[in-house]
Amino acid sequence: MSGPVMPLNIRSETVNALAEELAARTHTSKTEAVRRALEGELRRLDADVPLRERLRPIQERVRRWPASGLEADKAFFDDLSGDC
Image (cartoon, rainbow, N blue to C red):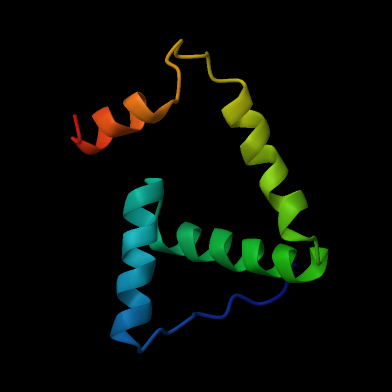
């Protein structure tokens, strides 16, 4: 997209705070955070991809994690929850 540069004046304190939080979490400027968020939302709207397909890359990343060797049985979950 090209054309004249038009400043974006955000008058909502909530939106400004969200932009600041996103910028801090992504270690970018507010401008870059807003650009990425808007592009991501536009891609999401254009894609019309089912949730299952959108989750697939995350599932594949998790599958690549090394196995812990722990058996996820009742004793394991009892230990996690402190019900020993």
